[in-house]
Image (cartoon, rainbow, N blue to C red; front, side):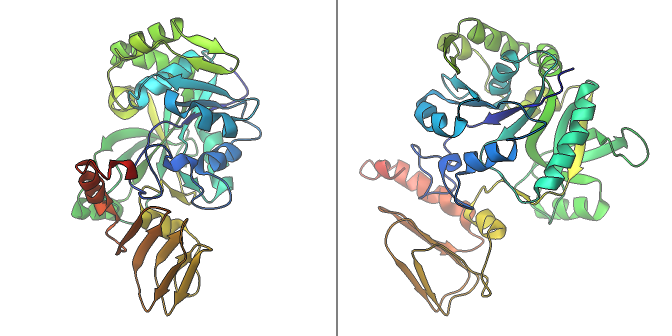
Length: 355
C-alpha cells in the first residue's frame, strides 16, 4: 500500500451563488474570500505537506490557465472536456493513479478552520481506506441546516469507541427544517460535506459494479488522452458518453463497504453570502467588512467592495457586495434568492454579460 495520499482537488464548476463576485469566467474557487489566498490556493496549502504527495487537479478545459498558477510545479492537471458531475471526474483521477494509491477527494472551494482536526480525520480515514473502505467525511452539524444532505451513522468500525469511524447506514437528501431538527435531537447524523478518501483501485472496482457506463467512458477517455507535460486532456467524444452523475448517487449510496468519519473541523462550503458571513471574522458590531468599506452605526452586516467605496450608515443585518459593474443588496438570511437575480439576467440579452 502506498504510504502517501494523493489529494484530488475538484476544481471545475462556475457556480453563481456568490454573484456578483463569482462569474462564469471567474468561479468561486479562484476568488479570495476568506484571506489573502484564493479558495483553491487555501485548499492546496491544506494538503501541502506529509502525508500528502503531489496534488492532482481536475477542472474544466476552459479553466486551464487559471489552474496552472495555483497548481505549482509538482501537481498534475486533468482538464475535463465538459462537466459531467463528480463521479466521472473522480474516475478520471483514479485512472491516472496507481491502484493502491489512497486519494483524498476534496472540492477546491471549501473552507476549514481547524486544520489539526482535519488532519486527524484524514489519518482515521486513511486507515479505513487501506482496508478497502470507501470513506466519506461527516461534518459535525452546528444547527438544523436544510441546505446539506445528511449521513446516518451505523455500527462502529474498529471498536466501541469508533476511532475508525462508522459504517454508513444511509444517506439522506436535504431535509426540511423539522426533519433536520429531529436529526440533531436524535444524534448520529452528520452533514455530507463532499469529501472522500479511498484507494483508486477500490473506487474503480465499485464504479465497475454500480456505474459501469461511467467507468467505461472514463477509461476510453483516458486511453485516448493527450498529455502535455503535467496536463492530461481526456478524449472529448469518449468522455461525453459518461452519464452525468454525482459520486453519491453513482457509488457511495450503493456500495457495501462505505464508512463515515465524523469530524468537527470548522468546515464551510462557503456556498452563499450568508455562509461566508457565518464563517468570516467579525468586528465587535458583528460586521464583516472589506477594506473599501466605510461603516457607521452599522451592525450584523457583510459589506464587501471590489469596486467603489461603499458607505453603510445606520443599517443592520445586510449583505452588500459591490464589484466594478454590479452591486448586490439584500437582507442577511436571503442569500438563496441570488438565483432569482441570475435567472432575470439570463433572460435579458443586454445584461447577460454580467454573468
